[in-house]
Image (tube, rainbow, N blue to C red):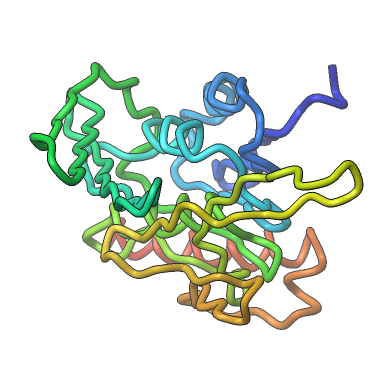
Length: 238
C-alpha cells in the first residue's frame, strides 16, 4: 500500500532519474528500491534523495547499496559485547558480498555471499542530504560517494546529523527504558559519523552546500541537483 512505501522514483527532464528513500528501517526496503530503480534504470544520471532519512537496519542498508555499487569498501562496524570488541568490515567485489569479522580469541572469519547485481553503478549521481539524514543513511551516503573514483558522485545539501551508533533498548522498569549504545559504524575511510546524542555529531559535510531554504524545499533541492548532473554529463560528452 502507499502508506508502506519508503522508496520513490520518477523520470525527469533530460533523461535524469530520481530515486528517493525515506527510511531503511523496513525488511522489504531492498525490494522496494530495486523495483523503483527498474523504472529509471535507463536514465543517464540520478538524484538520490536521502533528506529526512533517519536510517534504519544496517544489513538492509548495505543490501540496497549493492544496487548502486560495483566494487568497493562499504563500512566498518565495531560491536561491544561483554567487554569484548568485535570488528567487522563489509564490502563488495564484482561477484560477492564480503563480510570479514575479527573477535578476541577466535580465528578471523571471512564470509563471501553471492551478491545482487548492481543496477545503476558507474553513472553520475547527486546525493541530497539534510541535517535529518542520519545513522545508516549516513553510512549509505559515505559508501556511495566513496565508490566513485572519478568524482561523479557528490553529496549536496547541508551537513548530516552525525549518528554513527547502534543502540538497544533495555527496560529497567515498566515506566523506564534506557538506550545502551553497543555499536559504532564508520565510513569506508574509517571516519566515525559521531554520537549526536552526546554532542559529538561529526556528520558528513556536503561537497556542494545549499541554503537551508533550498534544502527544505523539495523542488529547489532536486532542481539544483539536476543542474549539477547536466553539467557533469555535458562535460563527459566533450
